[in-house]
Image (cartoon, rainbow, N blue to C red; front, side, top):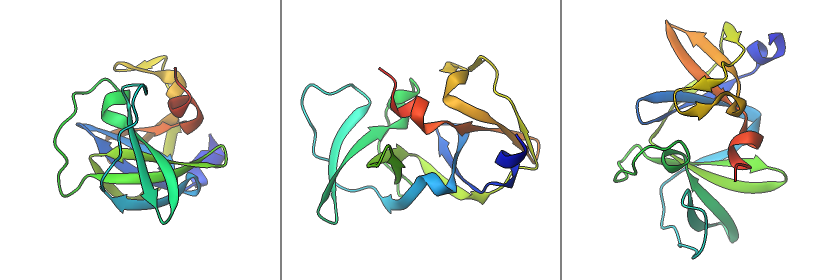
Length: 142
């Protein structure tokens, strides 16, 4: 976990929970824009957006993590990540900050209703626990 502690992360909020993604996995963070729905997709795939002429699929973390959808607010963002050479947009309720973690623990088998396999580890900072997401696991779920 020592190398994880040297990494920088983007901390984001989905519902009341905070999650983090390694900064090198993030391409950009944009405001919510019009999403074109695609029929017969998994429920957490909201559709696609046009990002400077490139079609990018968009996933809802609320839906993926079993939380009820809610109306977008002025803090709702799409975090565009690079996943297997493709761009994927992830809708989050809020992007908080760039951070590091002085202490990262291995993840438990389950974090609430979310499988521990989705996490690289659990970052501890300011008496808060923040799940560090393993995007490959989260985005490849069936």
